[in-house]
Image 1 (cartoon, rainbow, N blue to C red):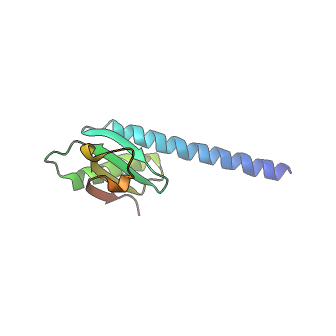
Image 2: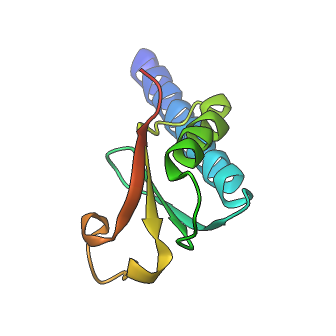
Image 3: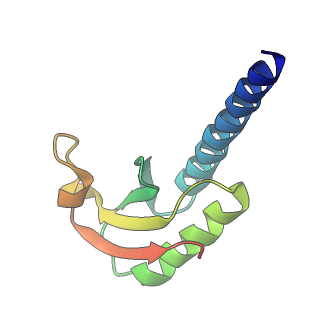
Length: 105
């Protein structure tokens, strides 16, 4: 019984730290210039809403991958979307994607 309690306690600590890592990564992304908001789904896709300007969005998305990397969050893709297409009644896949970058491996 004692070993079961220790395993459950360890899992709770690990889950809590994973959420903290994701929260700190999202805060770091939101602190970047041009970022209006950021939303993370359960599949590890980070949706970053920006104002559509003349910017090299591919480089910007790659930069955001570098921003989240030190936080060790489970973020696999950064999808940069136009803020004018974001409607919270629609799924994020329906939003106008400016670019996408794969983070990590």
